[in-house]
Amino acid sequence: MPRETGRKVIAQNKRARHDFHIEDTYEAGIVLQGTEVKSLRAGRASLTDGYATIKDGEAWLINVHIPEYTMGTWTNHAARRTRKLLLHRKEIDKLLAKTKKSGLTIVPLALYFKDGKAKIEIGLGRGKKDWDKRHALAEKQAKREMARMLRHRHR
Image (tube, rainbow, N blue to C red; front, side, top):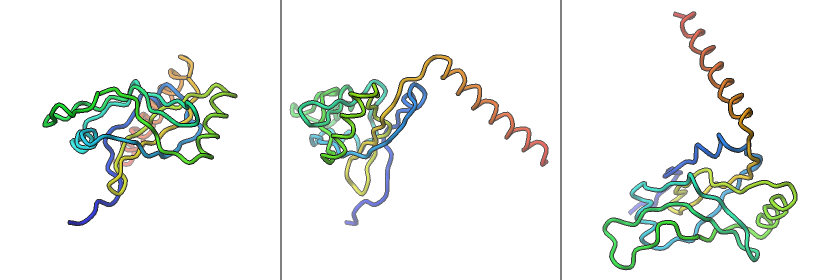
C-alpha cells in the first residue's frame, strides 16, 4: 500500500485570523490516541475555542474539539482533552519568551495530515480591537468590489 504524501487539511480556524494579527507561525506534531486519529481521518475537528500554552517546558493544546470516534468502544477518547504538542526546545523557548514579554497568544490555525502524520499549525497572535476588525472587513469588501468592476470592464 502506498504511503500518503502531501497535505490534507482537516480543519482551519478562520476565526483566529479575524480576531488576531498573526505575527509568526509554527508547525507542530500532536500526541494523539488511536481513536482520535480515526476521527481526524473522518475529517471531523473544531479549532475555534482552542489555544496553546506552555507549562513546565512543554507545549500543550487546550480546548480543541476532536469528536469521539463513532465506531469506538469504551476505549474512546475525551473530546476536549489536553493534548501535548511536539516542538523543538528552541521553538518552545521562543514561544515562552514572546508570550511572557509582549502579551501574545498561541492560537491553532490549521489541523492537517502531512505525509500521513497529524500536524497542527500554531500562530503567535496579538488580539485585534473591534475597529481593526471593521477596518479589515471594509478593506476586504473594497478589494472584492474593485475586482468585480474590473471583470465587468473587460467583458
